[in-house]
Length: 182
Image 1 (cartoon, rainbow, N blue to C red):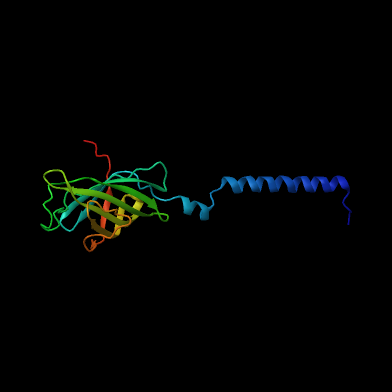
Image 2: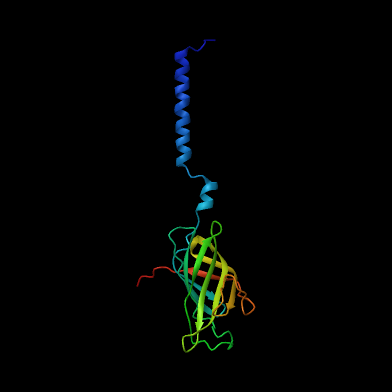
């Protein structure tokens, strides 16, 4: 058996060094599933339309500068803001708030609005919270744990108690709006 000389070792070490460098470069270039799964997922940004048992019920337009959190504007024209006649509501603001990613395709949100009377005076503050999971190719949203709380117009909806018991809504679906060319 031939004994390796110093020049033979340099050749073997050089080949090994080349292999290690190439392997390290490939590791940095190749996607790593554990890391990719924590940062990737469907985008919430866009416009969505939601339905309940009686038909179209809400529209939302979440935006954000990144995929982790952002703002949300929600319109709920089908909702009875008089709360069954308990308030003489004439108008309600859009619900505005924030969302954050809680997992790969799961999100949590909080939006707030005001109901006003004919003089424009606030009757109450509404706070809607819940969770969303985006499904099926990123165009279908499943909403659950949707809860509405009503606060006095001078209350802090993040620290004060609501003036009515929370209202819970059934789980339902929303659909991403698409461009519909004529």
